[in-house]
Length: 118
Length: 112
Image (cartoon, each protein chain N blue to C red):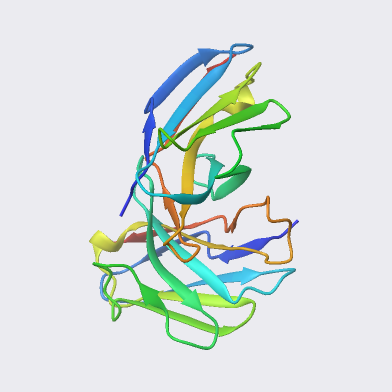
């Protein structure tokens, strides 16, 4: 089945630094990828829709300059948390859908990135 | 915005028992999907049910959808300790452009 690889799985960084998270579709092309944020014991909140070759679409309340998204190829989307602060600490997850899969199949998710800003 | 609500928030059962989780939503949908998440991991797709379907089965999973009540249920039969996880419903709304909206989730604990 479709596989989405997300790296790193865990990252600890100092306040003020930037962190890049990669999301790759391994065996399919993804013109669209989705980035979510999840706080402990809470649900997933959609942050943005990443579109290959064009600008990302951000959800209301998500700072575009804070969370930079680049989708330069059909298999790679990156999320960069710029000038990270402790309140940015969270679990970030990407997802994509293989359009060639059965329409009865949902989205494939990466394994997530646990970001801790100290 | 999160439009899905799930209940219960937490469910603890013994191995072999059935587990039922419910999900409600607010807008018209193309389909509703159920996902499972083990602690600190990504989500795994379990089952997708379309708006014109009422019931679907996959192994020990049974999903129902009532579009008139805007609700769905996930039944896991003969539960196992390995079923312990968080379960989320997600709706693909007609106006969402394929963006999923997740429910709040149910934390299922299956005790051996």
